[in-house]
Image 1 (cartoon, helix red, strand yellow):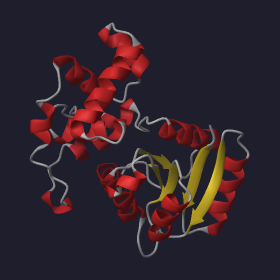
Image 2 (cartoon, rainbow, N blue to C red):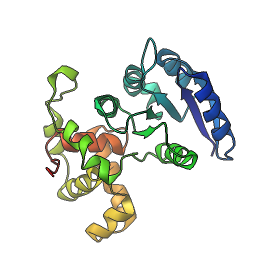
Image 3 (cartoon, rainbow, N blue to C red):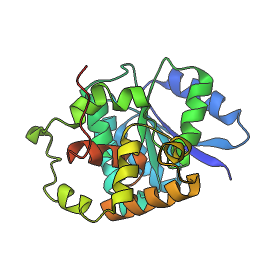
Length: 227
């Protein structure tokens, strides 16, 4: 299966470089380019993109607003957004995760990291390392900020629908661990972990693992470590 990639960045030179890199891979292709967020949303739907590489700062409709639009559109439920940023972690990145992004990647990343990120996102995984989710991102997510308008009083109630094992798995997912790592920690099979993850996603209305991480921290099920 070929991964359909949409490039959203206001710098034409960067889009050209990304296109050459992506199109060089046998399992993926660039299906469109957008110079702003509104165009990215339109093309994501028209071109049936699997993954959008989204610059967070663009003129007009920025990447954050575009990510929210994609996440809120039922017709784009299978589209995964990877935020491209010049900063490893900042408030914009955290907002993008809350808006529905599958993760983020620095623009200074190596080519193989970018290609791997596309494959990870297309597979429904979260681009959040254990270091990121137990560090600054976790502290941002655990902070209740009414100004961002994303608070959900029913979030804790939805956690009540999870079984004990699903909660245990959710805690591990929030730590940025893979299915194999979780399986080893909980002494179960990776297939069992995958089943629990999928059930938790369905019960919590999460698009992917990144949204499970957001829910785990914002609900208070997992709290960031204070170094």
